[in-house]
Image (tube, rainbow, N blue to C red; front, top):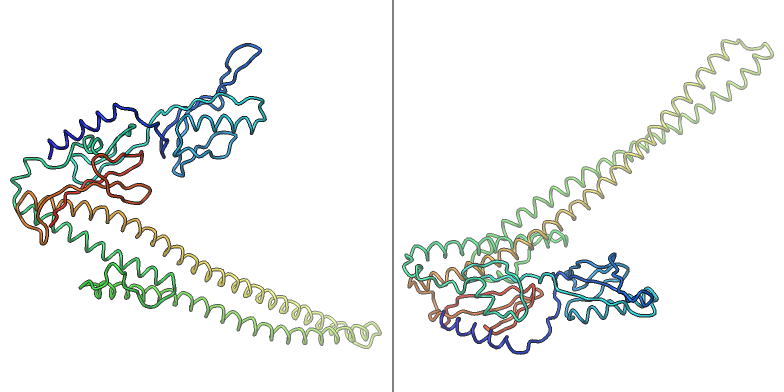
Length: 398
């Protein structure tokens, strides 16, 4: 296998010595851009230092250049991008002639090699890089001679670790289904399609259903508590309203009596003490009326606060569930990568220990490239772009 890999590397490098197509920029490439303009009066080139510098092709494939909208960079050659920048600067600044723009690649975006290789990890990209070169950078396929003597215990260890990962993956899938049910307001958890027919899915769904019910009861208890509080406050407001109506009637009567007694007192037909007593009664009734109005306003404020708290709790619950859903998605994605790697280790252990894997025999190495979130099959001569993930897997095919 190593001999074949070495011959393939030599053939690819020999082919690379021939004419190569221009490199097209990719995500994470660092570019050194220089802008100059010819000054006919002084017969010199003047560099625009404010615009010259290093720029990075962003995740969306664009280059953010001062004074211009984001310019599409990914997929263009450096000369193409330079021409676009020069023409866009001319149009934007209203220049009679376009400035001269040069674009050089300072640093290429990295590639990643994973799976059954000597040293998985991140490696620098270079033009005309192929799968076989990337595998060589990562130390070749992981087929060390020392591993031939591995005991069967290695098979048990790797298989056990894979079982643990698969079990955790099943739990996360059911947890995500529970979160989806909560976000949709459902009382039942739909079994994920990936687990349809799995022997232990019933227990997992039952456990998550218990959590779903508990959290629903907690949310309902909080909502009920606030609803009861609002109802109590409304009843208090109603009582205060009745009290206010009675106080207003008493106050109107007292004021009428005070007006009459005051007139009699002015004519000498009533005692001054009687006037003072009625004034005191009117003052007390006005104070009681003010207290009732103030208490009613406070109750109304408490109702508004309770309703805001109820809305806040609902929003917070939805926000927490959405955040947990995103976290679980990330954990599932990371776990899937771990499972894929662990499956490779199980296959490798089977190869080196002689322990058979049911339905699989002859070992082969399969290659694939993960690009823009999609994995496609590849061979040793497949070209690689910056940002690609090269995956090498040892497989036991029938």
